Image (cartoon, rainbow, N blue to C red; front, side, top):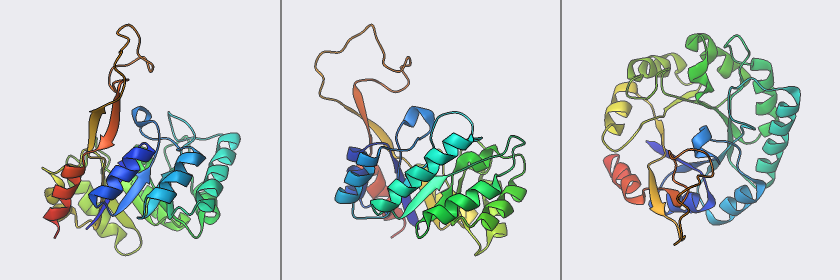
Length: 244
């Protein structure tokens, strides 16, 4: 079982590597579901992390219908990831009707080579997952990160099993969303998936001693301004032990 950990900073990437994770999905902006990290973060992650790194290529928050200029930015980010030696990228582009933008995904796949491409959870926003599966395979992607069209992988476990069966050896189906120590064995055993994605996120107090009580930087308290979001190294090690 390949364990992929989603991280949102350089320090988080190093922590996931130190925990024994097999692969990292490197992102920024956890509150937005993950956006493209900076070129500097990519470069330093490659310097300090000695396992495969897949980089999120998502230029903004919101939906997955991108303008011509946004797609141009995605191609430039793909080029930046290739220059620093990333092993893969993570992306997803949809049409307004909820289908996969097969043409532009194929262009991303070509631009990314020899890096491989994961189609992310934009897949769960498609109108027809069976149709989307075939389009993503045709575009040349290596895997799909999905919760089976439900909020969590546990809720979508039946669809995930169906997708794994339909995909066969043509593409890897990687369950993700809400995966943790308590449910990971159930998800893997009942879907037949060979890769799985989680964040194992924890919040660690930052170094600030003074904390301004009247202001939040993002206008929300869902992610504390003064805490650092890092993977729980012990939880990752405990998960890895399940598959020994």
